[in-house]
Length: 250
Ligand code: PEP
Image (cartoon, rainbow, N blue to C red; front, top):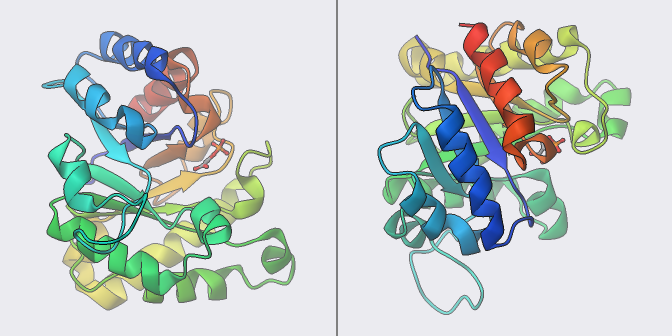
């Protein structure tokens, strides 16, 4: 039985005052029936982790370097995130793949580093609008799956987020059939590569314009184990109805 996960990606948003949103989430969900993960900017990871000990809210990073340490000015290692209280890290978000030209091979190396540091990797993948319109979505996902996911994955250290690039921050959402088709495909590929045990235990999140008013429908789709939420995770008042919809889907 996969435990559902509501993950929030704050991206490059939030100064120290935004920690009040973490406090508000903690107060709103003292005994959540699902896992909750907040990935604030790196500057807030330590204080967010210190604000949530023993609560159902875990804190994660949004990226990490593939090396443990060294001459990589401005980068942060997986060990550094673990050291300041993070338990997970988002990897391969399309904004990193585009803005920083991150290949799937780099994402895979980062995931290995994350796992070695004891972090859960939340590995993102998804097609562009042009790729969807050319009916290439499943080929793109197959390629990203085989190149981005390392061999050391388990149901405990890997979460996959299907995030169509054209749905991120746009208000556009694939049809429920389209989401289901991709999630079923990812599940089948995982089972084929890792066997039924691991393949069935990895959680699959949908991400891309998840909002309080569409979350319940999305959570009814097969093989959707939760969501990776950008904009609607910034305010507790928006994220809580999504978390509740996920709890209602159990
Ligand atoms: C994201 O960037 O991971 C995301 C899903 O953003 P939004 O929910 O704002 O579309």
